[in-house]
Image (cartoon, rainbow, N blue to C red; front, side, top):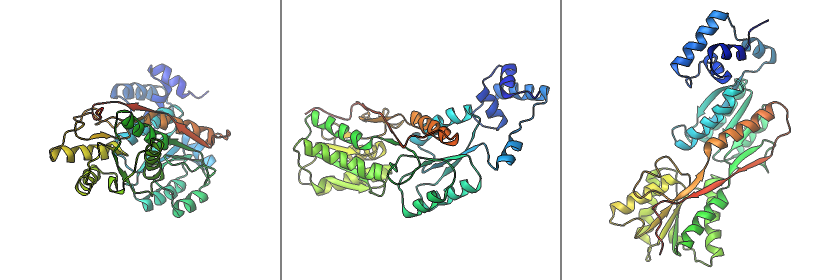
Length: 335
């Protein structure tokens, strides 16, 4: 009888997921554990039979992950969550980095289909007609992360509660006495960040009978530089300074803080700043940024579990909305 991964793990004194990672040549294994597993494999003559299985079913034991940006804490945390689940279930990951380029997203979706991956986790920033065409032709399980596509596709999606999160963080500013609250956002082709967070901002103001001013609104891109430019434009064109700014990401908030400090303003004494995302740098800047925390690692795990059910033919959820928390730091003053 052929030896199993479970028996290899027992002999090596490691987990089954560690054995799977060694077999699949993953980097997420310590040198000591790798040596133990390789020694046991050598001694037992164990030969992985995944190739034979893959040829028979015309599929691989690989999950494709389409990422818009690979070098941010948000997506690295999500990938950590994905790997936690997928490696334990014997799957490898094939990561693609689109660099926020829609054409590259379409290219990689088609490429992953050609690679015969078992499923795809697609971190979407927007859904265009080209996306619709490509995804409608994919005959493998797909879970979409970050955009609510439940009314468009049969594919399940995992999303953050962007509207309520934005509304909550703006309400926090209002509860601290702020009434003149500016907005630094992104273009609205990104529904979750560009549209829903903006709508949450407006609804919080409207429910508290606060006015909105066009001069207080700026839309750019996702860069720190855009936050800097947005703060500059708002400051230079308004007659009355806002007492607070809602930036739709922590990177934009960081850029806004940088501009204010470079130009003689005190944060939060002159202008308070909040963001969304709770990035790695947010607690370490001066002042620490008050923000919304999304558990991106858990998001990756949830999406992976849904994809596994999808692959195994289990009835799937159409939409999973993740929780959030307000993280209060020093970038907000009470007035």
